[in-house]
Length: 316
Image 1 (cartoon, rainbow, N blue to C red):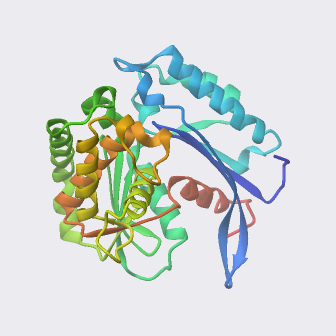
Image 2: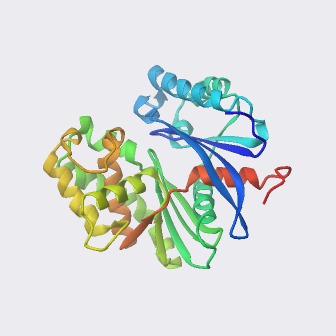
Image 3: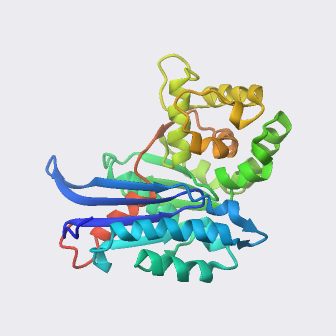
């Protein structure tokens, strides 16, 4: 893209996919908001390349090629208008430095390996930016490929943040080997996820919330599939516990991700569906969630929001 001085870019190196959002600030209803200009997604499946604690050569190459394509789009951007962040898979890899050296060279910009708590704060900033700034307590659940972030916030302030090492990609690979699905695997994946969430759940229950929001690709995928296949109760949108249970029956009846016939399901997301479903079921059960609203904005919007608030950006 041309180096338009009004544009900013956020690059998200996730465990399942690398994504980039280019945005600009516009005035809408007497307030300044971030408007998405263009988005890019590369299904890198970085976490699939773990051999022990290190990323294998194929995973490194997939990541580097994706970032090379992103870099071509960012050729005329100034450094202060781009931020790239790496999450679970990169921060856990023993050969993180090797990956980053090649990644930064191809992207053309520095890449920050962020902690789980910083990831949670950025996710919340992205969600809060597009929601009315009412003083409603919100629970945000962000199920990524390798980690899940839980945030309770009010207005634009995160009050409680946690990052847990459970995700749609890692759980699909660990419990649904080769794409096969059975009741034992689903129950075990949900049990392990529930145990991990239970360790922090008391603080969330104590603080409470009035609205639950799902900000990740997993949440948006689940909401879309539940609606397209009529799995929620009549008149209900978003994600419901009953809908998730009905979806789990569909998976068990299919027995394999390739046998699933679900309307609204993208082929590239099939491999991570069982793990994402298990983690979401655990979150609903442990935290007592009845219904969740999917949110398009999340980490990338939060990164853009931070960029636009930086000194010298002349905005916000």
